[in-house]
Image 1 (cartoon, one colour):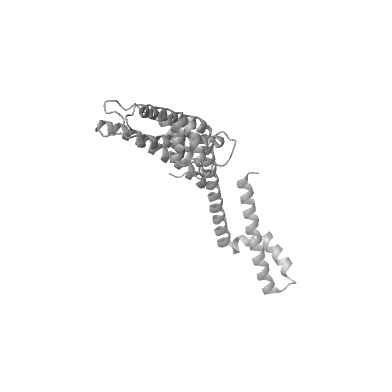
Image 2: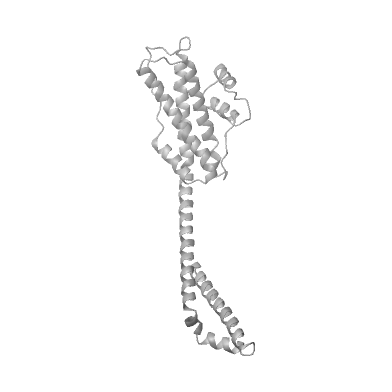
Length: 257
């Protein structure tokens, strides 16, 4: 028996039970206890209850059908959501890998710019390097995961999208500054390096979820995770120490910037 058949059978039994209860009370009131049993059996056997309570029966049946349809629609939406979630989660490791590569290559280009600076300023006669473009499929994949995530998960995933957009905007800003002959200072470049480290750290924090090794996402990343992100994006030695000190990345506190 299917779920629909079980539901309809239960509804029918409920309607009959309600009708019997009503008729029993009515017969007891009219004829007393002596005639009640025979009267009710006759009333049920002749299907008299269908005639006496046809309005109630029809109303309950219609209400039952509506309830069943709502339950079916809810189940359909739930199954659809779970299918979308499973699909988005399956490609998440690849999406995160592309995001990590994007952050690493961008950081490398920024370090090349810093190495060419004179007195903390990028030379006006040197072109700004061509920064990588994050594959559109990665953004779409991450957006699909946001859409197929639960409410408490969306905050962390959406934050990664926001940080990616900020990083992209800032690298484009460097290109625009050079085109307009504006000075590019070291502090600006160092700040974008922190963006790269944060992107890398946030992507790394989602890997276990993407691989199915964890069913939960973190609520935030720690400053120490961004510090590790500096190392993983190729920033070492004195420069790394300088950034750790400037942005206080030696703390086990949520990273806020």
